[in-house]
Length: 256
Image (cartoon, rainbow, N blue to C red):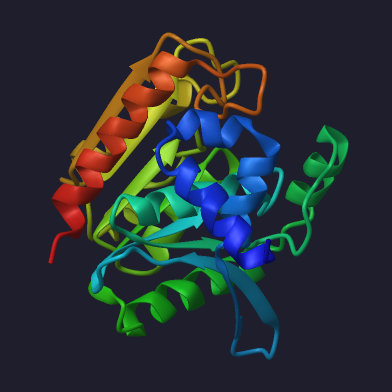
């Protein structure tokens, strides 16, 4: 069978599977990632950066800029982009590393090596790219997990977007920063998370309210990275609930 035909058959079957089943299967994750359009853009300083694009069946549509976890832009994140497209959104998964980590030590090193100015320029460039693209209805959201959650918030502070979703990401930002937000923020956090917890999230919520910015935060009886089926902390029930809340939030804020 021709490779393209085989891939279409596999993904047609996967379309009937729950998201968690696709993300938990390495072959299905890879097939979903292979279906994305690989893009590059050039920053003002001449640096070339890349991202992966998933397009829904009907356009124009609202767009979601996805920022990866500490592992990098792997098949898991690209499969998430494919799922967002299946839900009707233009999904652009950006790459802030240039490579994918294979071990926790490598992931930690890649995360520590991120140049904040280069990462900021990369995110702003891709947000501007989405606003220019005719497949986008003029409304854009940012969304990220863990490492990417903090950068999704940072991107929304740097460049006006219509909404932001944070999965257990760092939110320690000043009142002045938060006053720059244009759209509402939805946050998913875990009660048993030893890293991102009430000590940092509660002050963030208080500052959002002081800045008069819409914010909605949900806490789950789970641990860090509870929404990732490829990790040890996966909590299927809470992940599904967070996913439904995310889709409702994006549909409410990204409609034409």
